[in-house]
Image 1: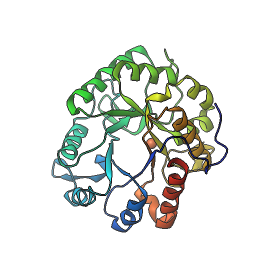
Image 2: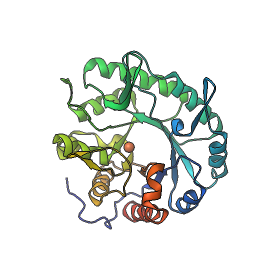
Image 3: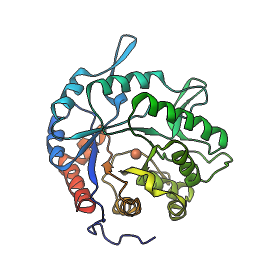
Image 4: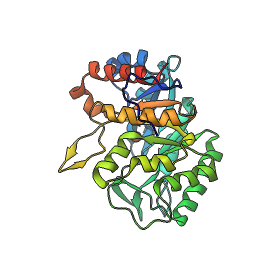
Length: 291
Ligand SMILES: [Fe+2]
């Protein structure tokens, strides 16, 4: 597997560029729009509580509808908890239904993870145990998503916060089996892989050698901070060049199936980053991924 030596080196396939956007920052949106092909929206981040009911913000939805002729949309949820043994989130389905009723998307995605156990919210995403039992459950739920929405559905690798439980599969073999059985696609988050390598000695080259990268439809690049030697999955920085090179490597081996690279950042990080740096990052990604 040949590593790209420079970011300026063009990958052989033209990959679109996306960015996360949570609404209510029209000046940021104006800077980003000329530089992105896709806006990635997380329904939960634009949801508001109205009494006991949770609903998407009308203000943000109208902001998104106003740019629908200029950009395509993808949905990336965080609250489905597809891996909870006792059931996934009905609230997420409600928000996704509401979004898809109003805005057309190219595909939607979630995380291969669980965020609640026995009905208790963990406040964090934990990676799935890679067992046959977990695989059967996830495959059944992916099929339900595909039949319900008739849209491509992708799952993303999350960081490993705690050590793995005993497994029947390697990380790559679990993903290969999941995609083979269901036909779902993958998001590969290059920064999450780097976090795992830093925090747990995860072997990225071995993982990529084993992974069927033709199932990767979307890449994520981001950067967080290190705390007590632990690299945190917070999206507060401009992506490191190593992260972009890793994403380039995957794109070049995905045989044209990787369609979008998304730069992920939190709205809370915008004042510190500044609009110029975000625009520069998106320009850098265009140079790195688009012919
Ligand atoms: Fe991600």
